[in-house]
Amino acid sequence: MAPLLTLLRRKAGAGAALGSLRNQLLRWLLIPLVLLAALNAVSMYDNALDAADLAYDRSLLASTRALAERVSIKDGKVVADVPYVALDSFETDTLGRIYYKVSGIDGETVSGFDDLPAVPANVPRSEAYPALVRFYHANYNGEPVRIAALLQPVYDDSMRGIALIQVGETLDARRGLSRQILLDTLLRQAAMVLAVASLVWFAVRLVLRPLMRLKNEVETRALSDLSDVDPAMVHKEVRPLVAAMNSTMSRMQNLIASQRRFIADASHQLRTPLTVLKTQAELALRENDPGAMREIVESIAGTTDATVRLANRLLTLARVEHGGEVAAMAQVALPAIVRQVALELALPAVQKNIDLSLEASDRACVIGHALLLHELVSNLLDNAIRYTPEDGNIVLRVCEDEAGVLLQIEDSGNGIAEAEREKVFTPFYRAAATLECNPGGTGLGLAIVRDIAALHRASIALADGASGKGLKVAIVFPRVA
Image (tube, rainbow, N blue to C red; front, side):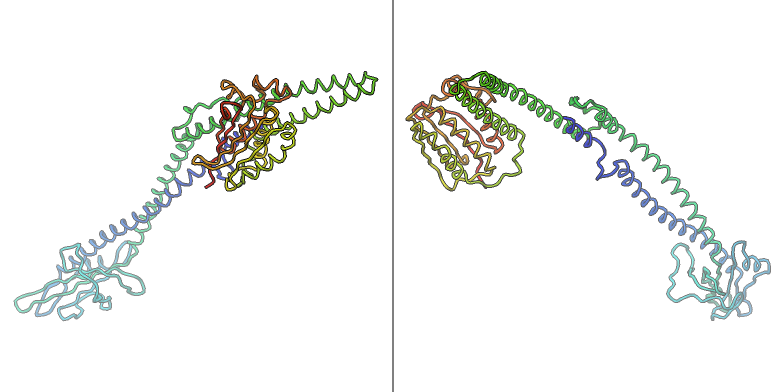
């Protein structure tokens, strides 16, 4: 029982092959969370950059419009009246440098930096502002700049046209703001991930607490305690596991009870022949007559044979009850086994002048264990020969029908009363009619037959023989697919 409970404890603990359930839950929750937080940070950073660009472009457009208001036509020429104070405010900035250029109607430079990059041909007009303005990136004096190009109508009584006002700024301020946005975004996301990870860790620990209580209860149980575990102590999703554990412990209890019952029965059955052997040996020690000594030794030999036969049947019963032969099953020709057993037991039948016949279909096959099926047929035929009187008859039949493969052994003996037909399958039980015919029987033959039949998923039934005389044993095996 101790190894079985140890196995149950191993099942209740964390499986070494699967690792820690807590760690798996944390990985499945936190890794996607970190990935989602990273994606969210990238999205927020892109949105913040767009907002920053929009704000800086609006400021750049305001400077361009302020400069455009000072552009006019004087004496037939486009002029830009930019005072030195305004010029200083355009040329310098606290975070970067600003450049400007005013071009006339014919593209000539009116004021500002003559070499400021021109507007690329593929730059579209900005739809964010109600003005003829285009924004583009360029390089000027070896550093990147953002330029706003505004088309400004100019006119007087003598002429009219479109002037181009360009104002550019270096990206130092934008880059500084971008770094600040990125840092703030990462800090907020890291704080959020840390907070959620802490909550998840505590939640997982809280959710797994009932499983740890279940583990501790199983580990601290006594080796003999196989009572059910209360399913209410765990969550609903884990209750099927607890139900399976309870079912396993119930089967273990039945197995242990069966083992104890078998040991008690075996001890009781072996005690009698061993006592007889001891008595016969003591008589032999006190006997001086060679003839009487020989009779006692022959009795000892007969008792020893009966004891060996009893022990072998007990071992067979124990092996079949525990299903130790299931793995060795294969397709077996049942008629061949019946024919072999009939040949092996033909001599006892001949000695009683019993008519032993076989009716078999050679195509009848079953899935089973050949040695156990041999034991089953041997027990049935041996019982039939023992309880059939002289000049009787025994018929063995093997055939196929709609139900499956049918094995029948019918004799002309005294039979078994209908009230006892279920009891005779109990180990060591003997029907009243069999006590006179075979007083040395063990009461294990039909118990072994029942267990072997159950192991092969076959049904067994007892009935009267032909004309209501004798006993007919019918076993139906599943048909081979």
